[in-house]
Length: 309
Image (tube, rainbow, N blue to C red; front, side, top):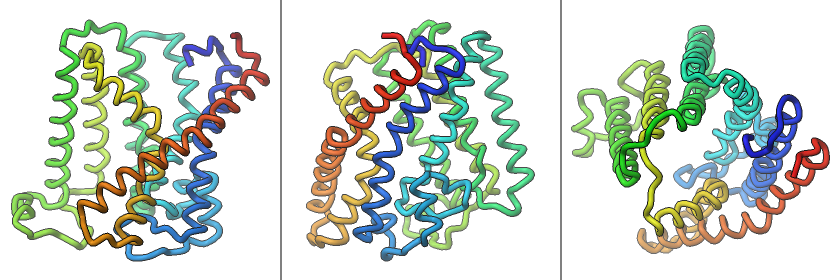
């Protein structure tokens, strides 16, 4: 948004046009492919389950959290929240450009937490947690806060420490998740006493707090680390980022094909095959669909909004 050089409704329109052409073409293709080839919602699911036409069209338009519909492909659950976040992101950008203080950014973040807590308090008794519309607002706002304070903090910590920090954060999240499910008996799960009743040890509202806290830690810590100077890692990261949407959409069908359909009989062969197939699909989808759609969205937004070159 900063690079567009726009403000007001022109910025809002240009940003949303580009996001629509960035997200919808591949998600629609994924929905159609899963339905046409009866691909499992997840590779560990028991079998294909037709979700019905209303839910199918809800998946097409990415409104599952509005219609309380099942996602036809497991990973698509997050895209409705992402698209709805894009509806307010330009407004946040313009507000923070007008009022650039860190205190104002923190206030917006706290208001987001208050809104999410308010919805949970009003609706948690009659709605599944996954359908709370504002559940992930504090998670997104942690990223907005990180962007706002990026230039105001001196980056004193080496970039390589950021890698270690993220790894430790992932381990901490998994430990907390084990406590979430098993409570004090978390260590017993390591010995094979695994629960299969889909229950959890702590109150459900702590799921919200857990996600918010870990996103907050990530967002606040990021501006204190310098840029990573490891050339091969930066190159690898750029390529993963370039093809990340294709990886996100393609990895479940790839796992389904390699583990469930082909039945290689070897865990190693199936794993390596699914990784290779995911990479091939992601690269192909980017060059055949994603990139052309992105460029088309840029041309449309430039023509309609008169973006300066």
